[in-house]
Length: 122
Image 1 (cartoon, helix red, strand yellow):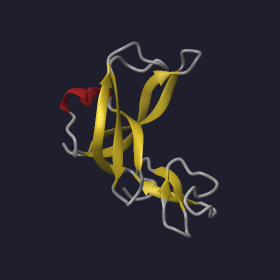
Image 2 (tube, one colour):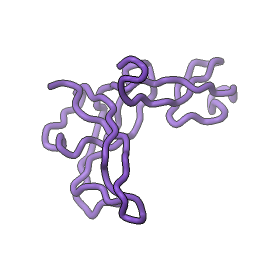
Image 3 (spheres, helix red, strand yellow):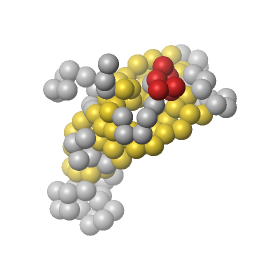
Image 4 (cartoon, rainbow, N blue to C red):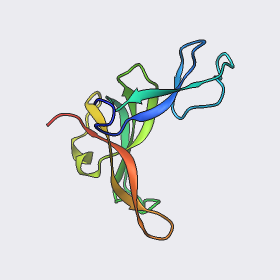
């Protein structure tokens, strides 16, 4: 999506060696260069996932899914929550997009907005 039209991951890119990171470290672990802030985009493909069916932390729904997503913009592979309504329809390699919504709660029981990945297609 164009900037301002939806959530995007902000991470880092090392200008010396080109490595991308999420989250952004202060120094590149490969060349020790300073890491600049970089837009990593909002879409990718599901590399692998698991559905957790034990009591969830942070008030997450039960079951909940987590997966590794290879970002489209040449970004790193990131670990993220998966949309609860798509857990029965996940497939390795499927296109995903970043979303933000109410998912779980904080330590006081208040609803939390969290980033998660959902299927990019219809």
